[in-house]
Image (cartoon, rainbow, N blue to C red; front, top):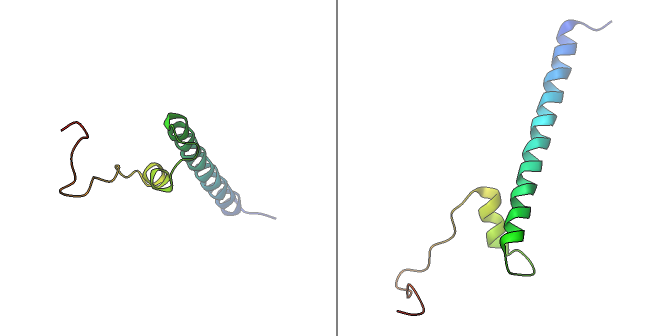
Length: 70
């Protein structure tokens, strides 16, 4: 015989799995958007990290020219 605590614990685990699955779907969607926006054949690893880790693009090295036409 199962108690109500057993049933509640199972629901909590299911909700946790659903939440994790939704997070994975969201990340996959963000990667698809980034890949679609990229002109490259493959999405660079650095760009994947930016998308998945929500990091801004790396800044250019200090002292590097800001533009090609300057």
